[in-house]
Length: 417
Image 1 (cartoon, rainbow, N blue to C red):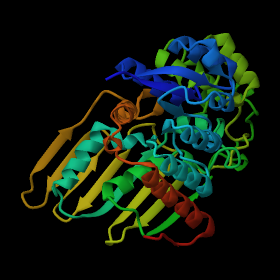
Image 2 (image 1 turned 90 degrees about the horizontal axis):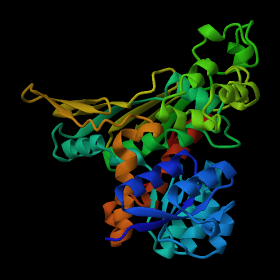
Image 3 (image 1 turned 180 degrees about the vertical axis):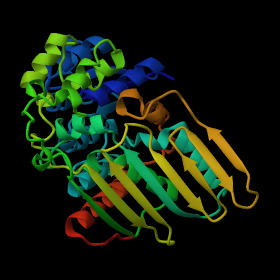
Image 4 (image 1 turned 60 degrees about the vertical axis):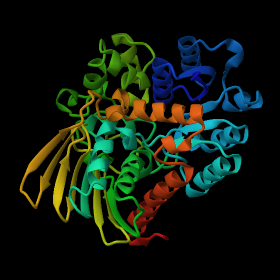
């Protein structure tokens, strides 16, 4: 089976990660790159061996050249997904689309319709579906090991420093330039929970706020920047501590440091913290997304689910408790502990892959597995190798938007069948 040719649209962290997995597996090769940032564009072209005539500063220039590859990886900023996704679908590209699908429902519908109209394979990067952990859990549920699934409790521990990096100082800090936190960070989890239940909920409610990372929480002695602040050594959100400690660690230099500066030197980090957004006090930023949120769901058969997203945790794997009529399962992202009510016996299933919980370290093996599944689906023309399509992703995104409506209007939102 020959390698699938790929056009990389957006050469940031996520786009690079999928392209590198494809190259390492020998199942895909990048033949064109579109990226507005000149450093990232040149670096990606050099890494993947893309010639200058197939390297573009804007995705529209790539699209104007016609179909140059079998498939496109679209990993632009969240609000810039719709244009390239629809245009590339119309050109006949199969599409691997970074989550969220789009930042509003009408645009997501437009993308799903473009995929249907052009009969292309489109996979939204809901990578949690593809981890060994998820596959093992779905198998246990499918075998009826805990009877009927009645209730689920699920925690997404964002991590205190990760939240400060991405959602207070970083690109996802504001709804008007990105999207609500539940969509940009937690559409993974809502999609995953729907995947476990095998159907979308009929009702949702939600509560959450920006509670801590705001001016009212700022200590009186704090400065606007960490480098000027007398409280910095004892602050849990110290930018110098976070980013200077990344130096010398290739993984952490890629992320989170790669978002802060292109140069991996102490002088460059300090200059970035002196002048750029990542050196700001977390209580003196322009962020407005929530720092904690809960979502409650009821399914058509009466089963219920509670989801909690919180910034005030370590950054680690998700934790889930699944409660059934014949038993329960406790999961920590690596290990599943099953207790059978009928026998009292306990079984532990270890699904560890060595991959960590975040985007920097592969989402527990999900990044690699999704990339493999997508490339296999394109190479064979068999979309059933993927666990969801554009329509299924649109359905789980609609749950997210319903939950946000519930939160902002203080209501219970009913979803159609």
